[in-house]
Image (cartoon, rainbow, N blue to C red; front, side, top):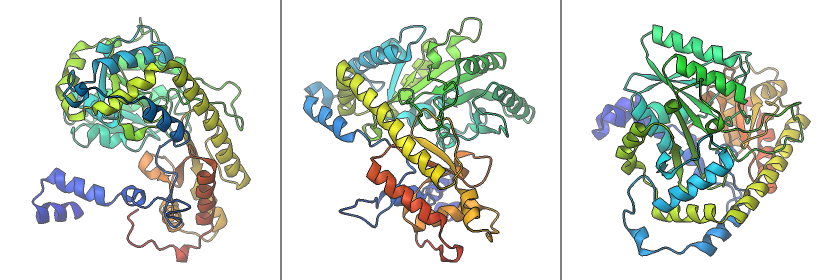
Amino acid sequence: MASDAHTSASGLSDRGGSAASLFSSMAIWEVLQSLYDPATNPGGYVSLGVAENTLLHDTLSEHIHSNISLTNHAFTYGEGPGGSKRLKESMSRFLTKHFKPVVPIKPSHILVTNGCSGAIEHLSWVLANPGEGFLLGQPYYGAFPFDLKFRTGAKVIEVPFGKTDPLGLDAVAKYEAALLKAELEGTKIKGLVLCHPHNPLGRCYAPEVIVEIMKMCQKHDISLISDEIYGLSVWENTVDTPPTPVEFRSTLSINTEGVMDPSRLHVIWGMSKDFGANGIRIGSVISQHNPSLMSALGAVGLYSSASSISEHVTANIFDDKAWTESYLAQNRKLLSEQYAIAANWAKTNTIEYARGGNAAFFLWVDLGTAYRARHPDCKDEKVGDMVMKALLKEKVFLASGEGFGAEEDGWFRIVFSHPTVYLSEGLRRVLAALSTDQLSIQVEGLST
């Protein structure tokens, strides 16, 4: 109904009306307009829901301001919309060093985009026709469905795992079952999308699991898209480390001989997470063995071309090797410390969370059960909605598991990659929300 109203009242297309309805229903945009600051906006929202890493912003800012020196060439179209020659050369060296690919990454293997959302959408556009699908295991990064299908017309086939570990070997059979079911029902599957390390579970796929996924992709003639945007944000878990934590190993480092045609493998990486630089808007597609795909991506690259200033800043970072190594090491140390704060908070307050994380920025927590424990008379079937309203009433924003394909209601994603003062204020507000009486939960003027 809302979409029809937007369409008829404003002369929009059906897809335009749907987009308008979607945008107006998303609380995140209203939250970002009024963020908490202890001095200038103490009544604002503490956002622990957006995957941003603010821990080293001062360090990053200092490097950028100390090294920026643009030539007049930066004010032109440069070498085209797929990334400057300098940036692709610098990025290829950087990723070859850190991702340890079987075949060294060349500049021709890279398409630069203005963030990874555009990279994912481009891959969906070039790999799938409208109505064809991609497998996406639950839970998943909440923007994946929009990136994959919203403007391309592709479908997303969600893969539930039940009690099976989503990152374990047994999960491969679940993917295959979902593929066979979808194709039996008339949806041709064109690819499988991984987030490695995983968002929101904060773990890495073991190489043997990736190999089995690759074999399944080869068997069913589909592509493997591996989003590795958190690949360098792997840290030591000092709270609940599993006996043998799985370290990150890029899919590019796995020998595909006898496993999968390497032309099926496409990797995504960008500056947003490992360098805490969402706003710089630099992402990339790395595909080493499919020149036709890279040509197709080049044709749509104009719609996602990055700013020459952003490209210049990023190349400066990659070329300052000593600074970059120090930055990444410090980032890993701080992420480990902030995870410990968040995990110990959950333990102290009897809040269940997904243990064993050692990558990315997330604590995946069961606030629904914690809320019911504090409100034994709560009869609401959708406790997640109740918790979200309580969180917004306390002016703290988290990502709801409902938007991340959680198989159980009441799970939320807490982003812990913030300075301790900010993180602690957010966690304090989460606790206050869990104690909020149901009858007092009223949030006016804010969509949930």
